[in-house]
Image (cartoon, rainbow, N blue to C red; front, side):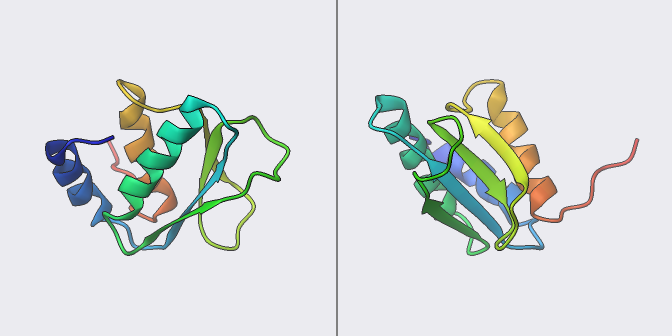
Length: 105
């Protein structure tokens, strides 16, 4: 899903995580669900602070995924595949949930 250049860049950002991050995917049998699962698996291999799990029993939009801290019910949920300009939002979500302090202006 992610090319090697994108993985290298993302890995640099994920090194800034100070707290564990859990990805919880809620998927169906669609092609988009397969793509989301592949993306999240790829991302979870880039940092030992990230775990990836599936929970198809949640009553939320499918396909979607939650970026949260282990043991918490809240976090940031993405519906669909965050590629293109949405990928920046995905990276920022990882940094926020992972405890990296926001940059002040």
